[in-house]
Image 1 (cartoon, rainbow, N blue to C red):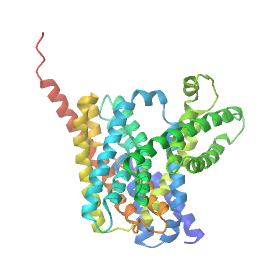
Image 2: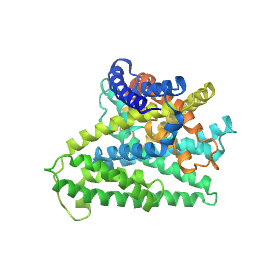
Image 3: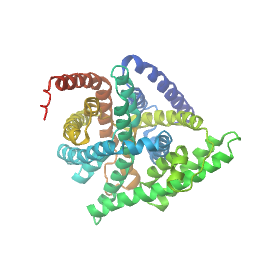
Image 4: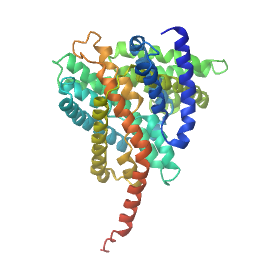
Length: 423
């Protein structure tokens, strides 16, 4: 692919991403569908771009996407809100991912035994087990127009999507390690996950607090938020080198979190202090970066995947399995978690994968470039594509009417239930 072709692809990607956001208001079809469709068109459809060149970009694209997306989640996260809503969100996230690992792993192993061992299937389950912050936020925005009292539900599901990213990433990398090194047991794998979370969080908070003071002192200078990006990427790489594989994502998240929650964290550490940082400007600048990275990554995935009817059928079948699993799980935990009618109804049908699943689908090729343990690494993005598309279309098109019906049914049941007799 020549330089001229690449420039044209990048330009069309930006225009299409902007246009598809406008189209979404009328069609309710998310921009992901159009962007991936464009990627398929220039890849498998017309061979306008060289797939091999795009495939070689996998490590760079993964680092960029993971660090920037999780940093964005961190700077948009209020730590007090996180603490207040941690319980419900964490339960939904952990059990959804765990069940996805088991059910999706077993199913894909049965359907494609020549491509997936049980462990490799469980890796796929961990990739698609979480929810996408961007996709969830988009559907919640649509629901908020017609459903009142969405405040606690919005916070709970947004928090779930933020928590699921690092959990899925660390789980996926741990499963890859267990496949490459069979001597690693489950208990050691769980210990690795916990230690990675703790150490990478400490590193991210430490660098974030230090950089907050730098931004405070440079607040009168231009381009200070641009250089934050130049600190973020080395921080991600440093964390991977010092703490271990998978830690960069957590460090990027806590790096962003500590910048926008500086006062709270310093009070917690008994070193109260204040910094003057234009958080609104930081978020607005980073939104532009996320817009470009997200758009180009979806096109990139569409360009490298191979479309087949078999993979489409299997992917959509897994979507049905996931939706059933999610519905049953929410019904089971709604009592102990004391979910309201709206919280139970929305979380039962809103289970949408997205960009993190695609990022993780590149991990087998990155960790096993020689193909010894993953002889068919391309199968992961090929299967992830219909799964992500299926969950997004389900959440955007079928989810809202099903949620409204469930809320109406739950409200009527609550009104008809007999009052408890007085003691």
